[in-house]
Length: 313
Length: 131
Image (cartoon, rainbow over all chains, first blue to last red; front, side, top):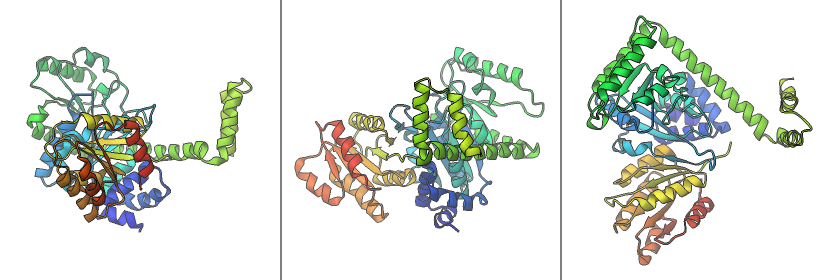
């Protein structure tokens, strides 16, 4: 077996971190290790946590992790922040709220930039979930960027998706109806000590009543005050109930299948894009095609046919 | 796929002045780097553990309270113990000239006091990244 893969399976943090970097950079060394670890994955419960900026996701994750640690479980956290489309850089600040976990070796936290991917996640997130799973984490928490209406990719990867809201969003609940408000397995109204919490609860609950078509399960709506560790144990209860429900209803396999489909699509997409746009074989051709399009000597569809024709032959 | 330089900006000890650290963090982000910012009151252990998990290429330590000789050296010592001397370590804040040679000997590759131009820090990091 690949050397770095066997160290990852033993849970060695340096190797876990290294493999994450290799996978994120699409290094050729990553593929070998990822192939070796895949058979050792599948046990971790993947929790996706999404919500608007400032809803307290990171603090909530910190408290959830502390509770899981009390139960003797190991936790991996992937904290995603936006990459600047201009500089390509990113300020990854979610960790600030989780620094008390920094020296607990049952917790592994990795901060990642979106690196151009839309949807709230990052391209390598599937790899990182598998790596943390293979390294022995019982729970893997994926924190998306602060979302608006369309960042719903989290459902592709999570077994349980939690949408975090705060009181006083009011009209915002109306505006984020589509997309983000459809994906929750559990709603959490955090910062529930703020005024407006009853109104927010009422709005979410009425949304659940209208939208919920599932006769077997009504989407729960909880309140928390994460920074005071209130409501966290109840949230874990609901997560566990959801996991049992998934297993009982066979939705678990359906969910996992969607995740593997998304993962396969992403790997193929990345490889294709690298092949077409990064390998020198096509680079010159592409530049010349773009020039021809700019000079109105060619249209983009014909140009695409030229490139794809060479690949798909 | 273009590799990004990953930087950890940390404030060890009890010093609460984080404006400089935040300015450097933002400048490095604007230079295309991924910057993990951990905030205030970090111990050397927390900083090094974070550096391991985040697989950073660079650690930037900011300290204005005068405890740099102990705290900066704690970090470099821990890094050495973990065989992580390929991580570039730089420091900034209020650091007297006479302490700089000792810090450099202990593994702090660059010391950037008040008045340093941001572009010089960015350039230094780009040029001296080892990994």
